[in-house]
Amino acid sequence: MRSRNKRILLGALAGCAGLALSLPALGQRAPESLLPPGFGAPSPQPAPAQQPSTPQPVPLLPPGQQPTPSVENPEGDQTTQDEQNPEEAKNQPVELPDAARRPIDQVGPLNPDNGGLGLDAFGQIDGRFATRLMRRIDAPIASRWASILLRRALLSQVATPANVAPADWIAERAWLLLRMGEADAAKMLVESVDTDRLSPKLIIVAQQVALATADPSALCRLTDGAATFSKDKSWDYARAICASLSGEGAISSALLDHARGNARRDIDYLLAEKVVGAGANTRRAAMIEWADVDHLTSWRFGLASAVGLAIPEDLYASVGPEYQAWRARSPMFHAEDRLAPAAVAATLGVFSSADLVDLYGEAADHQGDTGRDSPTERLRAAFVGDDDSARLSAIKQLWDDGDKQPGGLYAREILTARAAALLKPSDSFSSDYARLIASMLSAGLDVQAAHWAPLVEEKGSSGDDAWALLAVGAPRALVDLGKNRVNKYCSSLGSDGAAKARLLIAALAGLGRLSPEAASALAERYEFQLGSRNRYTDLLDRAAQRHEQGTVALLAAVGMQTRDWKNVPAFHLYHIVAALRRSGNEPAARMIAAEAISRL
Image 1 (spheres, rainbow, N blue to C red):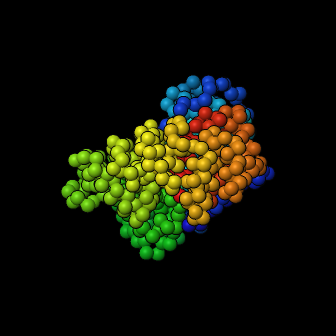
Image 2 (cartoon, rainbow, N blue to C red; image 1 turned 90 degrees about the vertical axis):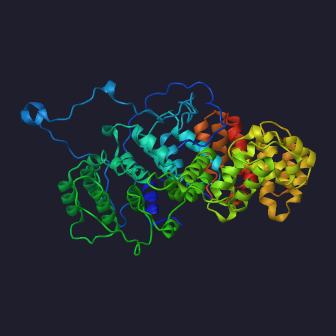
Image 3 (cartoon, helix red, strand yellow; image 1 turned 90 degrees about the horizontal axis):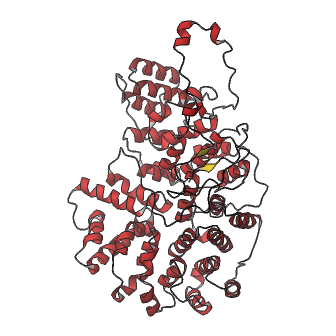
């Protein structure tokens, strides 16, 4: 379940009025992508007008304390330069010329040359509306591939929309990435803004990014700005930590004692003291006991992880899966301790198949000889076994353990994707066609999966998921997509597979692989309205018509706010897949559709 501290922050972030639209609210190396470069040539955008900051998010830390941020800066010192003491004037910071400052109206590490969506990815969307959409997304969402696409949109170098300040636009993007588990991606955004251009909102989000990445030193450039609007005790602790990291042990200890005052030495104070004690010239030491701690916060996660302090497993049950993704990339822990959280991160789209394989290799190097039955040894055999039969046997052993592991079978399919792609298509593997193809498509290896199409067609089993996966996931139509073939497969699923049948029909219709007449007839047979419309689908369709890939990616995530694919309405999937295809993201549409089949 979500922790109380996260609900506080989400509540504060939702300070703007709710949407007046009927939108759904359902209850490293980047992962490899097949997605093409951004659609069309980027067009210059008018400079956005500066707007007052919206209500600021409340930090997740420490619990029980409420900062009172204000968007108004205190009145500055009115002393003129002529009136200043010469010695004081000599110590004033040097102001950089405007030419040396990094612009913040178009921020993002991705551009059309390296996988970005282009400056006009969000078109002429109103910044207030985009902000509300981002805040409305209860990440993580159902689809790994939709999350990968959304990350790509949020990291793209895009123009700041109208009616939102550039720094606040960056803050909203980074905060959504953080909730998706994308700590490193969020860090890239916040670190692209110079310190003197940080808004109060961006300072608070950057604080959360520093904790999610277990990097207390990243707090140091934020403390002066935070002092102008926040009285939260976490900033007092941060100043003590930063003094310690600078080698000022005596000052650090004094700041820490002053921040605590007469309050008890609770877990949040003790963690700050633990980090202070790791700095130079300090005599602080703290023993951390978790026995009385009943929930995790970003403060507790960030500081404990920074000093390599293990957090009890039961505390992770008090927070969302994004914490597992943050944990998976924490460099202070051994690779073998990060395998389980990395499996969760992979299902969220944060870790790629290659990332997982590399982590398993690192764990194998550290563990040494662990025997033939260990996961790391099985993965090695999956790649370098004596022959295809031996490699498939190793792959299947990893799958068979999947249901008992974090992330489930889908995480193991992601892990084995590249090993599966190395197998030569053979009719001797017919009983494993579906899982082999699902594994390849989980990592976007659609070309390799398509090599199995002739064998799948030859087999011709009515209830074979291999056919369904290729029907939606192959780069082009390689299997029978006639109405009768679709109906035969859907009928074989029975009542328990009704959700899968509906999503298959919706995906095929959205991809344009079923005629409108056949799609309508099949939708009626399986009791759902393919053409159902509401304000949400209208927004999605209009964004697709305008080829606004970023807006489409954002709206796609809005329509998938659930952890379970069974709760994704079929007509939502139809409009999402169709919008992605029309706006130039057809590969992403296919991978989302294939994911729906493989995860149900």
